[in-house]
Length: 504
Image (cartoon, rainbow, N blue to C red; front, side, top):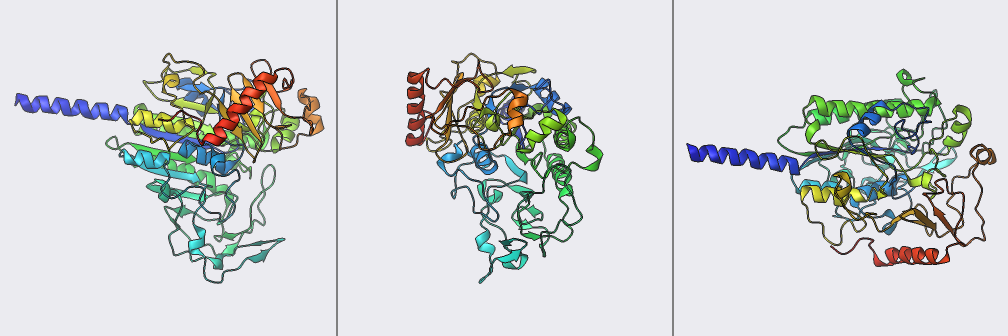
């Protein structure tokens, strides 16, 4: 009897230890959300974000966290692999584009699945599928408006769609792929839930700010974009409600918001002083809050690591919004989505891990979303090979408040388009190009903010000290030639070596 009691105690202790070493992991990934949108991060924000503010008060908020790219698909790839996107490609996956991944490539989901996790992805995918395998023999593009596009008859919708989330380590997927890309329908796991029979038609529907920005293609009859965000939020809560304390899970919840089309549901209209975009951010915050509440209600909150971030900075509508509502989505930073100015890649970044992270911590450590991979690997004791997550640093010392040599990262590469790079090292950022701008700022915006237009096409490069010049107005390139030389050499080394971390 005593032996059985001892066995039972040891077993329970073993299970408890296993549970602590294998926390549930939830990543909520916003789309086109600015560094200055959250109220806890920007005292001048015209948007209230109570759920995210609470998350920050319960965990650690990074003021200097970055995405890999200034656009959608590349940042998502980097987050899920721990590799800078530019080692694979620079652009987004276009309509019916192929997978961003190589077959069998190590991903966050594949790694967690190997450790016994149930893995789910809900929401925006935008990392490609093998649509070619569904194409009917002789399928041809058809005229739709001013452009040619694939029609509903071009595909055999009865077939499973390879190359998507299920082939990258996820056990479950639900979403619409990408809200403004065809096909306009729900996909569950690897099949459409309803066959698209029409071409995109949004007659009678209006956005609340900006344009639709939809690409032509097949659509399910009666498809309503306003249903997308609420349905994804509902599915995420359902996913959590199906989980138990006996098996750890990973949920990657990729919001389609506040990316254009800016379409907050009517009940959120007027919730902020930043117009429809602000209301869309508020709704996104509310959706995130529903996920947090579901974790708490299910009794999973205390053993769940939650990460909130975004894929890149705000869209170009931010300029006019700043004039109309006096809300500046990028805060004090220069630049927007697509830029390699700080505003294009410095994004909201919050991590909560009850009992492990001191509540209310604010860190100025420079981190990148590629670091999620090595950090999670360290948490679950997974031995990454030297060929995997080649740009990923383990953030555990920062998260747990341990002593470590600062800065944690030797340097961080920032990039959107080919051959235009920025290297961040400590307080310094070096750009190997004459400007970090892609989204052209109007003249009145420079006057409003006091920014200086420093871009010169005959300029060799740019250098800024962000501690003294967060808005990147004072180019120090000519003043510190040795620093420029050293930083450029390190950038070239990272690009040529095929990795930016030491060999494991």
